Amino acid sequence: MKSSLIFPAKSIALFAATFGITISLVLLNHQNSTPIKPDPMARSFVMWLHGLGDSGPANEPIKTLFTSPEFRNTKWSFPSAPSNPVTCNYGAVMPSWFDFHELPVTADTPNNESDLLKAVQNVHAMLDKEISTGIDPKNVFLCGFSQGGALTLASVLLYPKTLGGGAIFSGWVPSNSSILERVTPDAKKTPILWSHGMADRTVLFEAGQAGPPFLEKAGLSCEFKAYPGLAHSINNEELRSLESWIKSHLQSSSSRS
Image 1: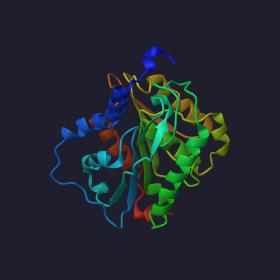
Image 2: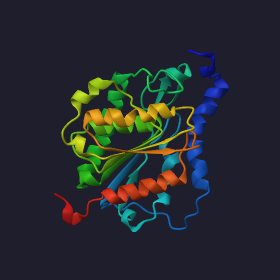
Image 3: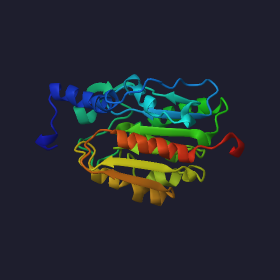
Image 4: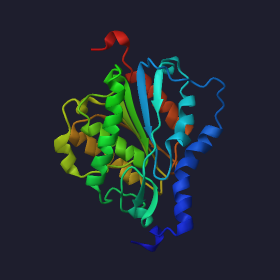
C-alpha cells in the first residue's frame, strides 16, 4: 500500500469522525422548527445506512430536512453498524457494515463479498420486518452514504421484491460481476439514484462512475448525479434532490397492488 494511504492512530480516529461531521455540518445550517414525527401507521418507510465509523443516531437529523407533506406519514430508520476490525484502517475496530481493504476506494478496489453478504442479510431482515407490518414494498426506500451506499446497492440488487428505490451517496460497487447472476426480476424494477461529489478523495469519483454501467448490466435503471467541487460529504442540494426523487416514486394507497 502506498505511503499516502497510511493512517496513523490519530488519523484513523479523525478519518472515522469525518463521516459524521460532514453530514452534521450540513444539518447545523438548516433551521426547522417543525420536526416530523414518525407515524406508527406509516405509509412509507425510509432506511438510512451511515458511513464507516459513524452511527445511526448521528444521522437522524437528516429526516428534519424532508418537510413536504408526503413525508408526514413516513417512518424513518437509522440503524448503527456493529463494531468490527477494518482492514483499510489497519485492523482498527470501529462501526463498519463490512470489511474492505483499501482507501481511497477506486473503481478497482478489491471486494470482500462474503462479509458483504452477511451485512446484506441483516439489512434484508430489517426490511422484511417493516414490510410485514403492511407497508407497501414500493414505498420502501433504502438510502446510504459511502460504505452505507455500497451496502444499499448490494441490498437492493439481492432483495426479492421491488422497492420504491435505492439511493446511493458517495458509494461504490462492493461486489464483482458474480452478483449479477443473483439479481431477481423484481429487484430489476427498483429505481436507483446515485449521487457523487467530483472532488471526493475518499471514494473516488471514478468509483461512483463505475456504478451506472454495472447497474445497466444488471438490468436496472440509474439516475446519476455528479456534484462539482463536492468532497466526501453530503450537501443540502443532494438531500433536496433525494426528497423530490422519493416523492416522485411514492405509491398512493389507491395504486397499491
